[in-house]
Image (cartoon, rainbow, N blue to C red; front, side):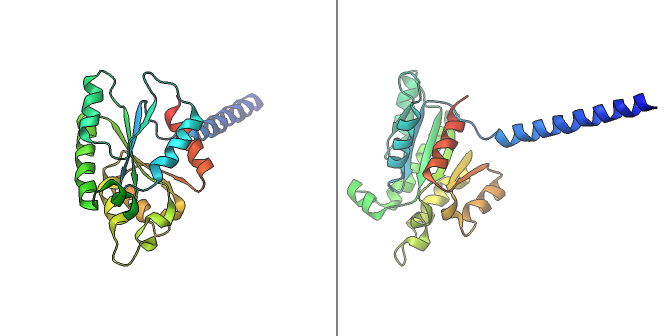
Length: 208
């Protein structure tokens, strides 16, 4: 009888340990993406510049290059890389609009929405992973914009629902905007509070 009880205890202990290990693995698991990656924008906010700094810190290795920052990337840019035999595997589109940034580029939000739509369509044609990133907090939301300026929200509508997964600064999701999209579209979402956390999440995403 004691042997049976001992065996049962050992078996239960094994299940508990295995369960904990499985849970830890699940917690450590997250969305993954492949290199090379191109970072663009929908709204010409400074977000891509921040990602450039973080990618530089990561020192990713991939030939001919691990990443490219092109806020005005087009569908043709994706096509050219594919034809060259070095297709992009991941596209990050930073959401959030800057009237100053669009003005400097000589474009409007309508121009951005048209370019972004074509960019996403080509990414889908090539099975490129699309990451929607909103990393500048509430200042890139309607709540931080001038009266009547809804360009931030238009940018979000164009990118977030079409994304394979989302990287979101928690401050920009205070009203649950991104959480709602993620739940409705069944899109995985990574939330961060600080740039250091964003750096760590990017390392997880792009390292095997």
